[in-house]
Length: 389
Ligand SMILES: *Cc1c(COP(=O)(O)O)cnc(C)c1O
Image (cartoon, rainbow, N blue to C red; front, side, top):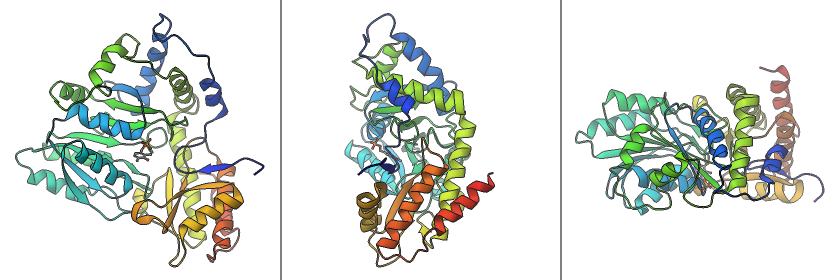
């Protein structure tokens, strides 16, 4: 199909031309005396990205899922208990992975569309007088439902209960787009990936460990080798990696961090994501559709999960958008399959790109028999964005 394809899945996201250029480099000698300069440039920027002064950034070849595994195996021992609130596909999958790795997973199941339940987390910690729970697994931005949880509130509960559990946070679809404050929120291990807010191809698991987490690694006896924090940290201290790093991806990451932190600046990036997301939400409402997310206070600024009316198969809407209008939308995951589609609004985006996507959504919906007034959603988004704010 001629023209540009519209990629509006919540990851991978559009890679800006400048990052594509940075990725397009000759292979280099990763054992040379010149190579450590790259990690020296990356370290302070990664710290700023995570919102930490003392945390240690750890970048592995892999994806967010590899980051989950790395986070668990580096700070826990076999049979350790973890508390895992589940309220969407990614929190379900992280809990599954923890169980597969041999940890004892205590789940707190919440309705999809809700956020991490602070009161139930508090009750579970309070009931755990013997401190059997060694870690909390919190998905900051649940990409399946379009819900952002209050990580700071989880930390406050840990403090109030004087509970020593480590706070492990998946912010794969949050970091680089949403506010994230590792130190202030008491996060011990934060996990992200390269292909969402960081606007890179998939290929890096980007993790950050607090000093407390690095200390826990010295006692954690889970088997790990490739994803060992200690081995990577030792090599990184000299600017090297224990194996062949993906140098082009690291160069691309440096370009991404330069754009986000040094040029646009994270406060502006966060504000832009909020403005774009709010326009999308107004468009969805004007189309007469509802979001999966329940509470306005936890609406995600990086992804909107839109429910389709009863009797409509969301998969058909997604196929129509792709086949006829060259628009990729995210599918409904798990129990939301067929019931919802997702609009990713994160990364290298502006209003006009999103208006194109919203127009495609409207056309695909009308084509599939959903009663939407053509242009209603686009008009609502335009009105909001024109007014500026
Ligand atoms: C995308 C995503 C993941 C999984 O990341 P992969 O890079 O696909 O392994 C995990 N958690 C969340 C919240 C995500 O959005």
